[in-house]
Length: 478
Image 1 (cartoon, rainbow, N blue to C red):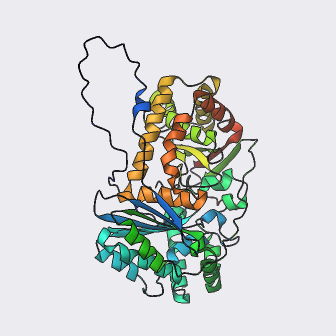
Image 2: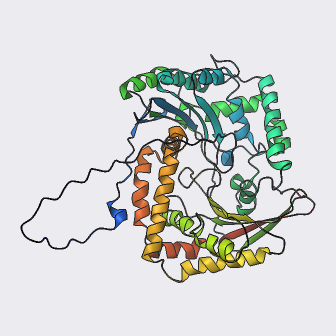
């Protein structure tokens, strides 16, 4: 995760790609064989086929199982269909505050007892708040899987909501805001600041980390109502990845989660964004910095459209890696910056959100370089995508990079990456097997679709330019 709201970082390997078949010797032939036309290398590559079993309990809980016996471990994840962009008005940061509350104890486990239980068994755990979901997960030895399922069902059944716990976590989150944003150079640039200035719909544009006065105003009744509304099995997905016996796990899931009562599924607010017709500019002042910062955010195509998949390849062509066009122009040729950062969904990845999103590029530069110069250089690079379709070599390289990135996301963090994509897809699309179609969708993208996508979504009038300059600090208006 580039920026985190309670996430951990780790790296590991989890084999999930289809294996290659061993090459067979070609038998000798008495006559010369006619020359064969070889298919492109990318067409011959094995396709991702992650095992997925999906079903629902009577109370509405979505259950996703994906068996992998590579190592004796298991990932348990519970995803709730509530993220910070659909939290209640006048309660900015409430979804994130509630994430903290979920570690304060449950019906049968006291405060921090779940943490001690996981750690004593050699596991790791965490939770995070994202645009469209809040998640909780454990990565543990597979022989403790039943215990983890029981523990997650226990806190879904009943959270220990007390005034003491609430006040304590209000203080923790307030300090987190101060440390990570208010008292840090560049603060929330651009992951927190850009959505607030690029979007127009309050749900997408409010300060989701939380205004301190809103955090302090949250009451015990607010917490209890929030839990009852959003933390029901009918608003959640359970995912299990790793070394287990499917029928045994199904029995445990039925035993521990099955008795939980069904609740009405909360109606989600309208989070749509209008088409942007004019470039936006916003400058933040920061007394703690010595170098200016520049970010450009472009509204993304709707999820699942051909243009959406085209943006995954455009991201590789323009921004990702030292071979990318923007890196070559701004870093190698012009020396405007030492590195570039950004991409789709700064708080996750291209595949684990559902709603309006931004493609962002950002950098830090010397004071002699103006924002207009940087924006002009970006426009010059984008113009090449608009003027003519990309060549075959560029498209092939982008596909390889995009596939590599997808595999890395799936294999990351001891199997959590696979669990994340399946759980979010179950929540948003009722289809955790969607990850097995992503490669095919990327392969369908043609040069013409890339050209069309760049023309509509990388136009300057679809862009918000956010800068940070070294002068007295001003606060972002809601």
